[in-house]
Image 1 (cartoon, rainbow, N blue to C red):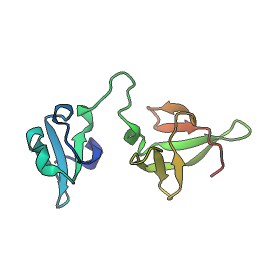
Image 2: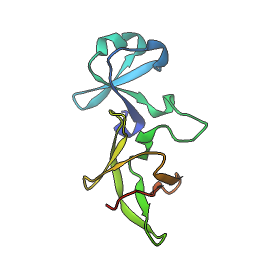
Image 3: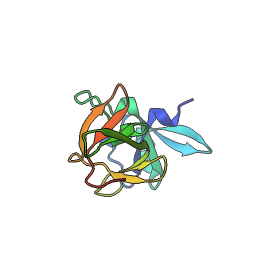
Length: 134
């Protein structure tokens, strides 16, 4: 059985670009991820569609998307150049022009390249320098 951790949300399907979709996409039905062939994607208009993370891997940078940061600890560089843990990313919202991460405690931080100083993929840590204090 496929789990949510193995999938990446493409969002709500508005107009399928069939040539850009992998052979199979998934839709959550009754708590289970049900596979559909790419050719049947037009039947899924208006539904949230998922793909396997392995189907969209970008080998150049090692990270798939902002969604890969879910579960990462966020550490902010303080005034004395000391790293302060501010929380774990629970969700990433890319639905607007400003990508936002919601931490497990509900606080939200912007995910912008200007604020990110480093990413430690092995340790699952996102290092940031935020222009405000959380």
